Image (cartoon, rainbow, N blue to C red):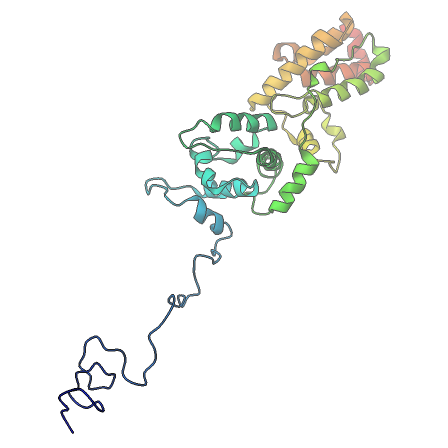
Length: 317
């Protein structure tokens, strides 16, 4: 009968037993009888297909997204600094170290990166662990940074590249194998001596070998100072070989002024054993400029000689 007071029997209008028919006015009831069950589990992904695991549209976005969170809004990386983050990614450095290396280490431009050597990256690792935001660089990472600095010097500073986007991690590992090693200190190498002009050919070969072994503080062989650009090869055996032939002979650069003066001192005080040789070496203004490149080429011209240089040599005697 309608309006069953004890709740027994079939559901009907006004039924207060918590049933699931449309007339149920119990606020705690479920969906109408026969309706779909309530959804279970996490919500479906966004319509745009995004998500924490997706790739960022920018080539470097996937690691920048992990490197830059928490950066104060007042600090914005420049485009070059964002491109340098990729260098640190290629070196397989932890993303949380990217910004401290740029802001605390000062590695915020290509020239600064290109100046670094194996020794300077190792020295950085010794002090960066004491920064307010400590940075740890394992040896494999410093080796990759060494190779990258050499690549940056040849391809960006002296070449046509504008960033390191053309490199992959695998290519950087290959550069480490072909370019980076712990070389023996050149302190034990002895400067060959030249007693008289008749021995020049043998001395020339030995002194070129000496300066290929003798390195400046940045790890570049001092051969680049005495090289003869007329003999520049068309191909290079390594990035270091390319760097030796491409570094500019210009007093605009402090490293060249220092290395040029060092070569001048080494040849002038250690190698030449006669007054005539020293006179030829100091000709063409090499002495006041302390110009090792100019002095080396001058003595070579005087010893090998054309008609003009033989006449000049006689005058110097």
